[in-house]
Length: 67
Image (cartoon, rainbow, N blue to C red; front, top):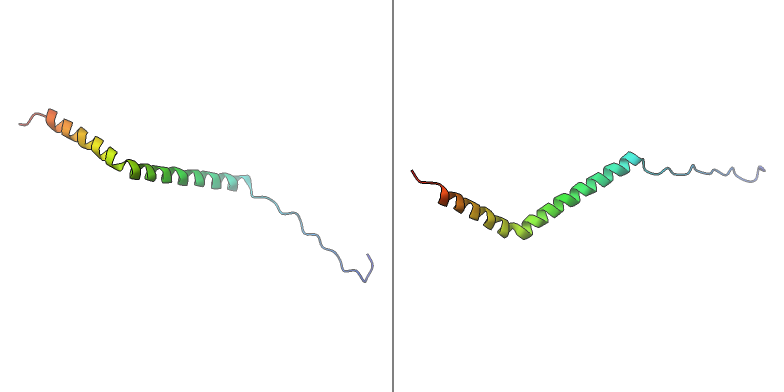
């Protein structure tokens, strides 16, 4: 290099994310998606689930002898 040219600095290449961080992000996303699907399923199927439990309770009450 000559004195009239400034020293050229090349930065080190960037490292990617560490594998454990990627795995943590993937697991967190999977958990969030599962929770969202569970809530959406309960919202959409809520009345049907309630009817099933009501039918079960009515059946138990009907078959239980009264003292």
